[in-house]
Image (cartoon, rainbow, N blue to C red; front, top):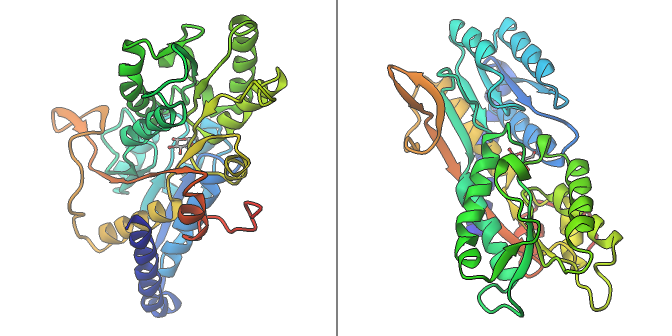
Length: 364
Ligand code: BGC
């Protein structure tokens, strides 16, 4: 059903594009500034490309920037786009709380701002937020472990787990962590699961800038400090490159050999390398957040704003961005999309058949 929905959306969108194509040739509808955090992660390249091509098809000019995961660079790029008189700014932030001043400048110039995927915090000048339902994504991360570790019918008790969180300056990271932990709580409470190192809480298990290197060295330390005579059974991972690097650290100390299976690890983003790993039976699963669908939703939102219409049906209860607007805590109107758990069983159907990655790319 979901697959058909995605296919139908892609088709509808493509048809729209064909009709809009004529207009694009004759006049530009103005420039939209799009800022992505980094080129070095697979997903943001896909996001940037989807938003750019969709907007261009509708006749907008797009100035797409990548910020090298460097906060001053991102601020400078946004300032530039304001100077160039962008009609709308679409921003995936690096540090969600570092854009307050520059967004005040955008507001002075009357430029609407869309926070893309990551909520921009501490600014009332964020007009909309477009993302996946991040708490639900976190719950899926928990479900992956419940299923993969067979927590409802465990082979032994307790099963040992280690927790990894995303970047503490990314609001999403807390939603992922809390969603997963809420799902896992009953299994901690009933003694099925135990954190081998005892380390928990985003302050302790967060991974700055989602760095897989940092995660790998933390995993190596955890393995040597807590698992020389115990077995690690699972890892909560919020991001595919972290899943892969923690698995590498485990392999380096003998996991993945007869009698010593790799721990069950989930992930997020459905990157090519993780798809390969899932097919090879190493990473257990990932969460697919279809960047094409987020891209289409962004294009639609930008176009609605540009037509002077008010977007309908937004969530206005969840994403408090820690600022005050009109005398009240500001909850940013949000479009929240659905994500999908991908395991070996449905990878072809969800990833290849929908065209997210080609069979060739993932080595099929
Ligand atoms: C995104 C994830 C991504 C992570 C690292 C988060 O804000 O929601 O999809 O894996 O950043 O780039």
